[in-house]
Length: 167
Figure 1 (cartoon, rainbow, N blue to C red):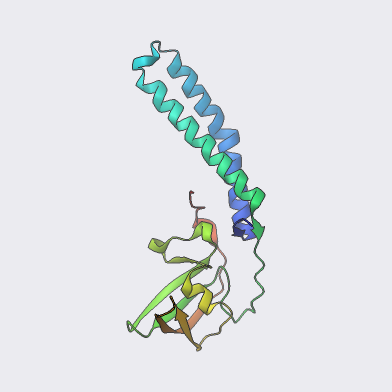
Figure 2 (figure 1 turned 90 degrees about the vertical axis):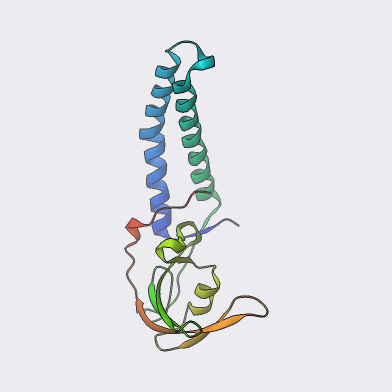
C-alpha cells in the first residue's frame, strides 16, 4: 500500500508532473547540450551542474509517478462538525497550558514548521472524528500521553499553498 492522498494532493502532483515533464525537462536538456558544446568535459563545471539538475528533475519525476501509481485516495467520512482531513483546528494543550492551531493534512503535505500535521501523527490520530469542546487523550507511546481540548474547527479546504514534500 502506498501513501494516502486527497484528490487535491493528486491534482497538485499531476500539475507538478506536467510542469516538470513538459516545461522543465526540455529546458534542462537544452542546458546540458549547450554546456556540452563548450568543449573539454573534464573541466566543464557548467556541464556537470546542468547534468546534475537534469538528473534531479528526472528523479523527482520518477518519484511523483511512483507516488501516483501506488497511492490510494483517502476518503474523509467525518461529519462537518467533526475534525477531519484538511481542517484547521484550535487545540488547548493542557500539559503546556497553551493554545495551538494545526492543519490536518496527508503525509505528503505535512510540515511542522507551518503547523501542518500528518494524519498519521499522534495528535491527528487522536482528534480526528471528535467535535468542538471534547477533551481527547493523545497517546504518544506506551508510557506517555496528554490531554487536549478541541476549541474550534475550521473546515476550509484551500490547500493551494501547500506543496508536496520531497522524498
